Image (cartoon, rainbow, N blue to C red; front, side):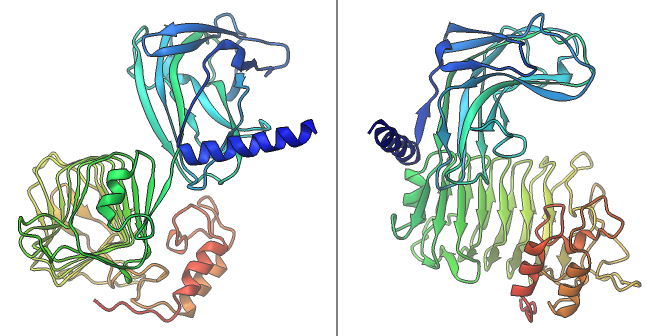
Length: 457
């Protein structure tokens, strides 16, 4: 009878975590189990009061050192958390280092997300609320991190851990307060919300907005951080700002940071921008931006523009002065009056290729003597902004040899390199279609499903 009650309770906890979105972490010292790595060594975990609520401290002073790189976990939270259907969680809270010894840039005493059986991380690099270079002792810092691509339903625990690199002087103490884990939701348009803007108004940082195929007549403002707005596909999901846009608003105006937008066609702003980005750490992926005054207008740093068609605009892209550290590749810029307008001075530097392939420009006049689909001569935008690997044909996902069509030669090129990683002699980055640094069935599948396609602007 007790087992049944426990089972029902666990189901209730799972549903509570997935549906209510927020799950504060109990920061009383009794809620943490001391770690035993290495066996028999314990670290003081003490309950403290912080300006931000209840917290705990971990003190590793006097803990023995080691001459090797590794991770040690000193405490585990007793609660088991469950990854929500969205596969995304947000961890946030305040932390402070109150004892920093030399070489802290080579150490981290952080909170980690581990599988509930402590067999490893729930995802690579799930180190959160950690020391960052420049932090000073005795000062409270706030951090929020969105962790994506997790396995829905997987159980995990929060753990205190420390990494060191060849450092024997490893005394370190840290405090945490007001820590919470938030389950990110999936908001669906139009089944739950009739417009994309309504879904954004409801969304919280970390949420994903999924937009089904259709045409949405609206102008959109993304004024929240850490959102994913995913259309069902740029061929079937359109945002059209031509109807009722009396104030010349952009189709998409992004003022929040850490935003991903993918899978849309955006049209209809004959007097202004298709997309304007005011904030850093924004990704625009696999969209069609068409029939606007400016296709894409960049005002902020650290923006990634990848696999887009930017067509039939007056200015395909407009980059403001002092915009820096943007990454722009695998884009097709065609039938624009100007493919790119750039106000950059000599100091600004943006990356216009990924190290082996760049963009397809309508006015590129270079040659390709070896037939690899990459122009022999770079495409110069400004002195510090150069596409070193311009494409001879329009980019298509799965077109491994960049000849403008997807055929058996592309599938064969991927298949011959099956199992390769970036360190293998046979490695060809062009065959790594999904850019995950390994060539596997996913790359073959992505290419095969597009067999027979040719680019038509």
